[in-house]
Length: 466
Ligand code: HEM
Image (cartoon, rainbow, N blue to C red; front, side, top):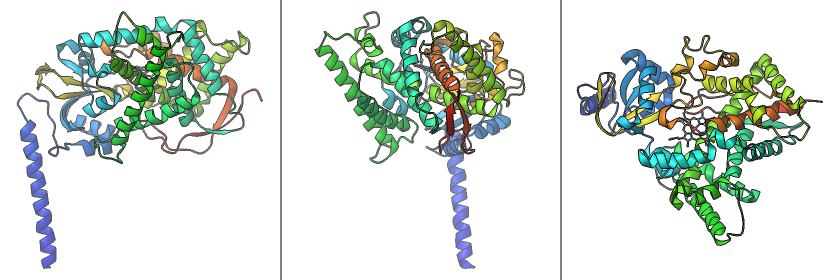
């Protein structure tokens, strides 16, 4: 009995202290004019609930407080906006004190000079240098498409009769095709070493920022250190032997006179481009295959589009810009996949000064999570939003709808948008024209914090013609 009383009073004390601490945190951040919401625990805020519940956390808070609310997640007081009009306003008004607000731990790994870490004139210069490498006008040139075509053919060769993990294959595809554009003519040993280190860096950016040996975050820094070393050595070797000519992005960045960059900026540009185009391209490719497998009528329509292209060409003729532009159903499949799978949940901003938004006063230094996920399931914009229906994207206006923020918006609109779509389109082109496949065994796909198949997504593949 006594023991019970001790346990009960212990519990009561814990509950009381918890309530006091949470109240104290609410008072600490509870200024007049802020949107409604709760701030959770001192230091940790509501991060645990957010990570555990993911999209449900957002929906539950929205039903309680409305589509703009405050919280404390990922170590920062945060305003979450699920209001489509406000989201658009935030993305279009960086100059009013709404700059990118990604966690410092992520910026430290991707690079302090990376594009998401700079704004104003610095951003203009770095973005200018990037657009000169990956804008649609540049990729339209045969050289870029030829290299992507060549890579896809080789990457997708020899799958007949095999069981492949399409998640692993999409992952390798997204990183290797980008890395080959960055540095051409290097051995596969270098590519493999690079991928090993890059994967460490990538996982590090998604981990808790605890920098002690053994943690993923710490490993991320090891990965970054080795990547900086590898890229610096490559630049050194190239500068030492000027007789060799290279036609790749690294040499372009090294010789760019219009937007001159320091070596540190070059390394960070390379890492940023690889980082931004890695998971986005690989997840969309994997999920497109998954949705097509589940919807054979759309797979047939997609295959017909690609077989028609092949019928106009010789066996070894590469896919060119005109072919790519004729892939309207493929483009629709890609947009529908990004929408339904929500490859990107939203983007982060930070206030550089006190700012008024929708009648609320947001203090300087707060993070704003421009949460775009829910708009992907808006029944007015996308009737029957949970159905995979690429045909809805054949109406051109939908891609340019003002609330379609799949690639962001404003001055930060994804510069790699067209390049990413090209890569996924070429991947699908060779996959559907060379192979048929069936899923091996109902493997699980999780949607948060990132879309992935924890045990892989295995397909039994055979030649399409056999
Ligand atoms: C097809 C898949 C892709 C999707 C869904 C996607 C999505 C996005 C989104 C939503 C943003 C806005 C971020 C923000 O506002 O903070 C963005 C920015 C960016 N993306 Fe992409 N992206 C894709 C492919 C690529 C590729 C292939 C590259 C590079 C080669 C790339 C490079 C970038 C860069 C550098 C930025 C930052 C732009 C800036 O801050 O000015 N992306 N992307």
